[in-house]
Amino acid sequence: MKNPGIIILICFNISINLFSQNPIIKHIYTADPTARVYNGKLYIYPSQDIAWNKEWEKLGAEKETNGHVMTDYHAFSTTDMINYTDHGVIVAQKDVPWGNKVGYGMWAPCITYKNGTYYYYFPNKPADKSGFRQIGLATATNPEGPFSIEPNYIQGLKGIDPNPFIDDDGQAYMYWGGGKGNSLKGVKLSDDMKSVNGQAILIKDLPQEYKEGPFVFKRNGMYYLTFPHNRDTKNSTEEIGYAISKNPLGPFEYKGTIMDRFEDCWTNHQSIVQYKKQWYMFYHHNNISKVGNLRSVCVDSLFFNKDGTIQKVIPTLRGVGVHQATDTIHMDRYSKIYNAEIDFIKGLGIPEWKVTNTKPESWVQYNSVNFTTKTKYAKLQLLSSSKKASIEIRENSPTGKIIATAKVFNTNGKWKTINAKMNYQPIGEKNIVCLFKSENEKEIELDWIFFSKFN
Image 1 (spheres, one colour):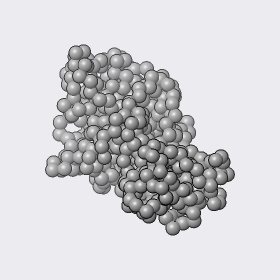
Image 2 (cartoon, one colour):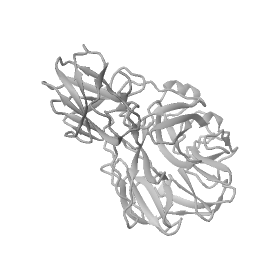
Image 3 (cartoon, helix red, strand yellow):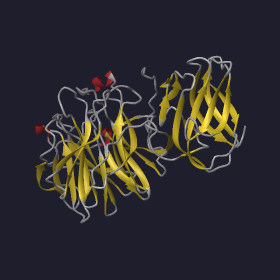
Image 4 (cartoon, one colour):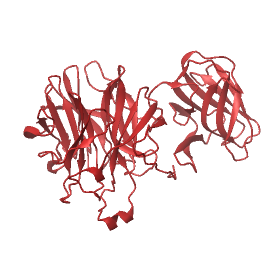
């Protein structure tokens, strides 16, 4: 794929609705997602990637050698895993009392909740420009803020990727990475969540190569430590591994890989959460930018085996959530595809994809579409050079019952919306398949479809 020309929009404490599949956030670049459930909503707290601006050098900024440039943090929430609300910036480098105002090094954050307070931990470069990141803290009484930043960083937590975890007995722990020895560390936190309690330990018996981004959760009395790591030096991209223990600080037993490494994105960073009886894994990939330091948050379902081990998560474009038939269904975020490809639609500010290079009998399938409202027409956004072609919208499979047949005409190089009268009304949750019928190859490109009462 070619790199898209996109416009990155910055939100300042405003709320906008984001409708999406993977990646779930498209209007800004986001990475390192922490997912938590608060007050019946699922919240996501990622870092934000931005492109380097050489003008910042005049202000004394120094570009990271690995290219990551990160200035602030947003909070997002959802109730259906389809629509996400951006609550705007909650913590920014310019507001950190002890931080370097032009450090651009606000890497992976994490949050937890205790006794009426939300504790948001984040790494940042200190004002003394020592080169070592310290871990700071901001607190709030609501999950989307406003957050108040503590005047000083937490002593004894030098490093990156803080991950607080509170056990069933109320004892809080902190895990983090960075520093020498390719090790992850853990320590107890004090009752006020603002200082460490005791000596930090190195978590042993994990893969020996570089590790970062620890995320700990508990299930059925077992502690799961998940982390990205570079398993060998010949292939330097990261995979997500995990280890288990009967105690929060170990010893941990390494169990294997949750998500394989991406060939085209050096980093990955995960969090795992249960929401409405389903477990999910949040992670990031450079789906939009195709550049390793401009990443986008994604989510897929996660499943456990009977013995408590974790099944490998396979990244998808479809993502998760049940999609309403009356909402726009981007078929390019497919569940399955046959004899066709995906590429960017050029010239749009927020990135859009399309189904392209279709051939006679090509098809694309999108799972979990819910028909709860009576509809009469299917509407399709497409571009075609054909004078005689069609798209059959079928139920559940390429050979399934035909919901509607859209007759396709030559759109003269422009995207057009066409209507197709439905043959019948599907009921409940279905998979939708668009089957391309044409005489020649590459005649039809498809963006989205939805179902409506109106022509």
